Every structure is written in C-alpha cells, then in structure tokens.
Length: 235
Image (cartoon, rainbow, N blue to C red; front, side):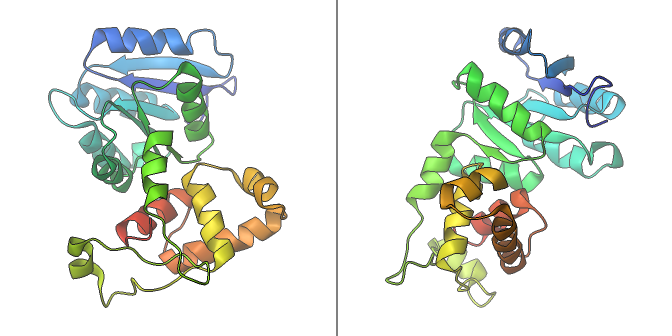
C-alpha cells in the first residue's frame, strides 16, 4: 500500500523508547497529508506489523534492543511485502559510515533525532514521494569531500581501503561538469524540478543528465546513484 485510501502518506514508527515515539506522534499529529498507522518498539515487532500494514513510510531508529534498524530495513527490502515501503532512518548518529550502511541496506533517507519538526515532516514527505533524503549535516559532510580537477570535473576520491577494493574496477571514471552539478543537487535531495530551477535548464535536460549519471554509476534511480557514488568514492 503506497498511500492511505484518502491519498495520505501512511507512516509507521519504530523506536524502543516510548518518549521518542510520543514525540514523533505529536509531530505528525494534525498533518493533513500524513497518517500514523502504527508503531513498534522492537525490530521483530516492526517486521511483523509492517508486513501486515504495508505503510508507505517506515520511520525507524538505527539502534533497537533486539536488532539494528538497518537490519530491519535490509530484511524488509528483501521481501515482497517490503518492496513498496520506503524506509527512513532516524538516529542520533551523524556518522557518514552508518548513513552509508543504512542507504546500502535499502533506506531511502537518513535524518538525525535533533532535527526540527519541519525537517522531519519534509523527510517523510520526500520518502512518501519516493525521493531520497539525507540529513543536512550528513549532506554537508558528503559535499565537503567533493573535489574538482583543473577543468571543473568531479574526480574520484578514494580512502586507502577503497583504493585497495576499487582500483581496476572503473573507479577512475569522471562525470562531466554539468553531471557533477546535478549529482550534488541529487545528494542534497533536490527534485528534478528544483534542479532545473537551480541550474536554469529544462526538466527534460535534467532527466538526460540523471540518466547519464545512472548509466555511469550502474544505478536505477536516485537512491541507487547516491549509494553507488558513495561506494565508489565519488562523494
């Protein structure tokens, strides 16, 4: 189920602290386009209820008592019942490695618990629309490692470990200057329309650039492009 019968985004909350769940309930209370359909305090309970309710968005804490929220996402995305569920990670951790692992597991977004109500609701709405979302702080950390060569092209940045794993596997491929700009905005969570406005180009041109990015990174969609770029050391 992608949306409720009335078109609203169906949301399911997973956190092992009642106070946190109560706070999240209060945040979404009264929102006309979001309806809370359930909650769970453990990974096992989350999987059981999510399979039954099939919410559009699963808002799940990274750290749970019985298993990690990342494992919940990984298991859910492997099942038929979880294919249409967008998983949004909520955590106190701003660690880029944790965020990367969550995204690789199948999460569509990553947001910190100290975010504002507006940021949280925005992330839920993006997830509901199938658009990836990264917490601004995590995005800033990603953008800080973006480097350009003398011709303004995004070049590959590899840690010692990544060099060992990726050299010889196409990691030296470069994006064009415009593709690099589009990728940065994708990472920031911009929609195609927003990218078009930001770069003063048409949406069809944005789609052409994103298609080229997907092809070069071997991705099928935005989330896949971000994951592939991170994995290859591009961002």
